[in-house]
Image (cartoon, rainbow, N blue to C red; front, side, top):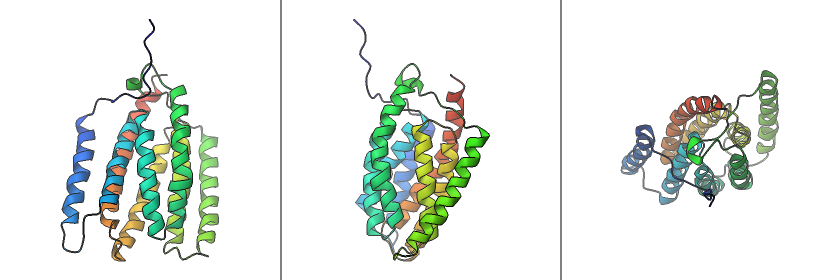
Length: 232
């Protein structure tokens, strides 16, 4: 009898994976204990699922999309409550449905098993140039739209949104360059949430910690996906 393929399987966790999980939890709890801060269960939950999402994403594991669905839904709600409307649209109307699309796309690109990862690839130079041109045009357009709202950070919000749209699309299509796009997203988000922290947003400190760990893992993702691209 042919062995039935499982839709999900838990991959092997390395010391780096445990460092990301434990580091985020410890630093989040430590920051929450400071006099000017308080523990926020919503942002903490979103952070844990998002950290798991990028760990599974690095390994080319489909559980990435399950954790991404939960994390995106929570972060979209928090962005909406903070007045970061472009971020809210990004998470709720783009990232959430893209988790379902990405799941089925990755199943088509799986190597031998879920543990082996997926067939990743590099963009050609014309595709990279087109990506940059479209990204710049999108940032300019979205920032103009956001200037007509009460968004406190229209340019940063537009940059984070458009870069994340591109990164999520490249993630779905299994391009290694998605990790470079996530570096842009993470840097922009760090700036946005640091400003939000100075304005007294309660869950901003944990969000900043979260994006620090995202940045480190994006570099790790470049390494792992480069290796998977050589398995084809």
